[in-house]
Picture 1 (tube, one colour):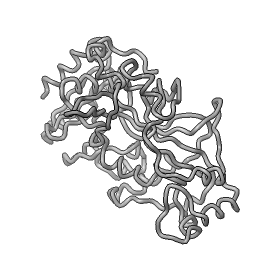
Picture 2: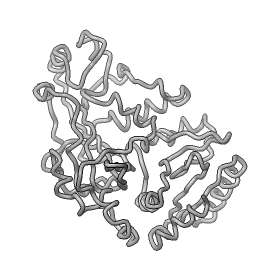
Picture 3: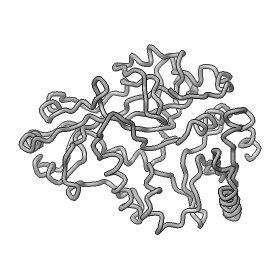
Picture 4: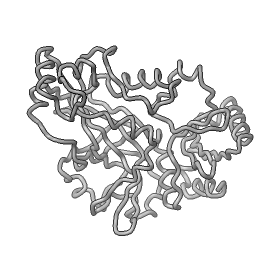
Length: 344
């Protein structure tokens, strides 16, 4: 469970609780690069040339063909069923609809009694069906620490939690895939045309590490979103004011901006060849406002000097910046929101 919630969140009423009626997701709040990167992640993963050859066709579906089944049966490959989980921060009424705002996407393996529950190709074949429905969910899901309290299938989670429990701890299963525990890395096929060419090597390394590395234990991997609880709390405060910032934006030295994808941009080899000025925790593209949630380490002299330099460079590029201390978010969330409103 997410700890140390500011008392201010209680002022937002049902907007920060699980909706008690059906709702949709504001997918435009998820960066396009994240959505595109997740589109091919379904069925058996990672997709390899050997799978296409075994299938004898140019298109693979959610469930394996007879050729793929024979291929994996012969190799004795085992799989882990991996859940793709979306967390929500807030909901609004849009006409006669309820629309929720996402703030995190994670993955974790299916488990039984605290251990990974492996599956063989025959088990996958027996499931035979279409894409996963978005009605399974985790209650008490903390994307920052990776824990949860209850897994509830078939929409039961929203029935249990509707109007009662924090919406940010509802982890909705939006997709699931079957991850091979052994595969030829050099034979993996990637859909990466939407990634800038200079970033594709880093993107591929990140995919292997984050999306395609078999799990050794039951744990959660973050794929996208806010990185700390203080960022989430400020995000909810801003949403309460009708301000909808994008999460995690890269700002380059020439003033261009780019939506951040996973932790691709922490890749050392990638950063050496780039001209990244910094990464804003939240960003308002039209207003050209970068929002930073500064934890305790930003009080150190060296970090203060670095922050001041970055703020000065941003100003030269026509980008305003506002730095919100983490301790203020925790002690007076409304005042923290006022800093952003004043900057606007």
